[in-house]
Image 1 (cartoon, rainbow, N blue to C red):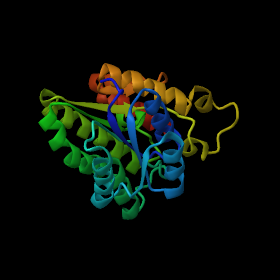
Image 2 (cartoon, rainbow, N blue to C red; image 1 turned 60 degrees about the horizontal axis):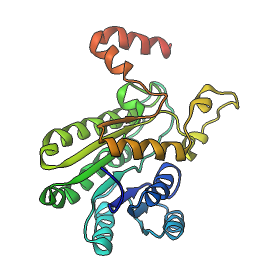
Image 3 (cartoon, rainbow, N blue to C red; image 1 turned 180 degrees about the vertical axis):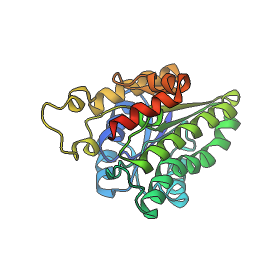
Image 4 (cartoon, rainbow, N blue to C red; image 1 turned 90 degrees about the vertical axis):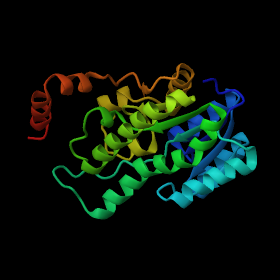
Length: 253
C-alpha cells in the first residue's frame, strides 16, 4: 500500500519510532493522526508535522476509541492504523512478577490491538481496503529470557496479527507485524549498556526504522523486521523444540 493520500493513525507517537514514522509518513504524503499517553510530547509532534494530536491511554478501549473518534472527526476515515505503543518492562530473570505488570503488558501489547481492530475493521471491510500494522518485537519470534510478561504478550500480539490476516485479507485488509531487534530509542537507552556494546552497534535509528516500515507497507509484507533479525528461531523451534529450549536454558544458567 502506498502511503500517499492515506489517513494514518500512529499510537506511541510522542517519541522514538512512532514520532519518526509520523514525520516520514508525512513526507510520503500521508495525513497523520498521532496519539500518545504523554500529552506534551505528542502535542509537539503534532505541531511539528501538522497532525492531529491525541493524548490517550492505549491500555483502555475508551482511550483507543478516543483516538479513533478524533481521526474520524478530522478526516472521516482511517486507512492505516499503526498500533505502536508499548513498554519494555523490567528485567526479572526467573520471576513472574505481580498481576499489575501482567495486566499492563497484556492490555497494551494485545488488547490495544484488539480495541483498534474492533474500531476500524468495519469501515475498512466496507471500503474493501485497509491496513493494520502492529509493533510486536523480535522477542515474538523467540524469547527474552529475563522478561516473562513481555515475552508472552509479544507472542500473543503476533498470534493476533496472524489471526487478523487470516480472516480479513480476502476483504482487502492487509496486516503487518513489525518485529524489530534493537532500536536506538528511549526504551533501549534506559538500559546500562557499555559504549562498545554489540547491541548498540547493531541498533537501528528511529529514522532507519521508519524507512524499513515504509518499504514493508509498500510491499504489504506480513512480517517486517530490522536487518539484525532473522526467522532462524522459528526454524529452530519447528525443527527441534527441545533443542531450541535447551539452548535458551543454557543462556540462563
